[in-house]
Image (cartoon, rainbow, N blue to C red; front, side, top):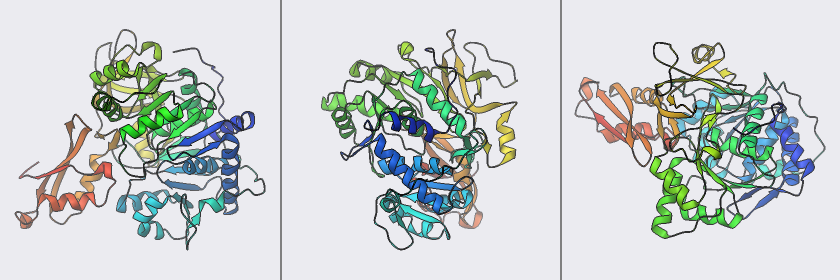
Length: 498
């Protein structure tokens, strides 16, 4: 790792952002694929105006604001506004639907929900049933029971900032609990989030006004840390707006070239699609400084072919919801194929075998992590105690390391499926299947797939009275109509025993 400033700030993210707004108000903070852009000065004014309105609604320190929206300029503006108000941002994947969405909103109990027209149209019944909650539409007009975002970001009197304790107050809540094996709230502090993004910015040597292309959703660790780490360095985030539709690789590359990005961050499937597009369509790649892959297994041949075709390193990043970013492959070590890099500064790791002994070089074991940005905990204290022992987070991931200290991902010890970089918890899907009156027992596993990583598939034993009367398609539809697109079962087989 390159030398970094060991005295990084622990002040909240919005304070780091405001420093860039004060020093470089005319620098571009965000551009999007629709051709829009906002400066740091504009972003500061609009996020501050939103904070003022939230505070007027009584939404400040100790309150929660849930986000269920696709990537957009307005999403980033409102996230910074919520941080400025002192409230906690609850980040929910925008593809979450039906009972799954209703559970997460009831469980987190937000005072406000910030969404967009796509989600609002699809999930109006769930959102309108929340009761005394402020609903904000990021890209639609004001209507009954729904506030217009544009009305809430009009300039107004300066608000009084709610002071937060950066070490104990919760900045963000995620809903991806890979270590616990079921979906629940994951709490992170302001100081932890700030230290993590500042460290990333320094290790990768972000430059002022350097542009990065963002494809990962903001409610995920990769998307959020990418955006915020570039804001901490006064850089520019280029957003691909897709609003639920699949990424068009050619359009992504065209946008990257048009706005002059120097890096792309995304899931392994993005780079496989780019490699295929380059060889099939003979498209040109933009001049990039580096690219980052995270969220799943990156095939070595894809890493090699991309680096050769793009003329820039494709490095890997490893992180998890509970530990944010843990390790990163440095640009100097980009020639090593298959590694997830070495721990970031401030991060301690150890690899432990099943018998509790420390693993040696080349031996596989569970990765344990200790750092200033490990989660504060889960909403369930008992699960927190199981996941963190003496400050060490049990990641549930299996790794090995070489003589250089570089880490290599070898699989998972926890029950989790990785579909296109998304974590899917079999237990959640099994609980849903058990609600069907025909199901006696259910088992959900991950089936290897070269295109997506792992496919969620189910094996179901029927109750005696339903044998021969229920088709697999009916059971799949029962589950898939209630969960986000990435959680859907891709196959279901009825068996005699599990």
